[in-house]
Image (cartoon, rainbow, N blue to C red; front, side, top):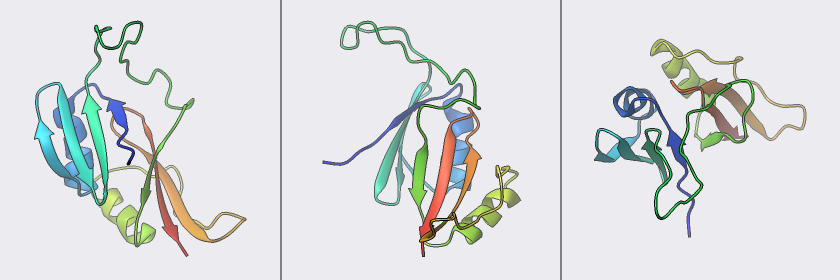
Length: 126
């Protein structure tokens, strides 16, 4: 078993500019309304907003409404947080704060947002 989250995005092409071009993922499937991206050993699904469907009654795929209030985040375990953060900044992506070690130690991390406001955490085990 593995986990492969799905993020609702406004524009698949714009999201791929982030997840493929900046972060370094490999696109496995790309359609106008959906993409499947491999990120190291993990996978991520991207889909545009969609109404309820027969297999998901009472479920509507919607964009995040307030980036300051999240119900989850995408955590990327990386070899070198500082190097990836520096690369992402060179791609024009803003970090919420510079990489740092939390008070409990054992990791270095930083946070940023994808183009639709989904919270992304980069973390490195120390």
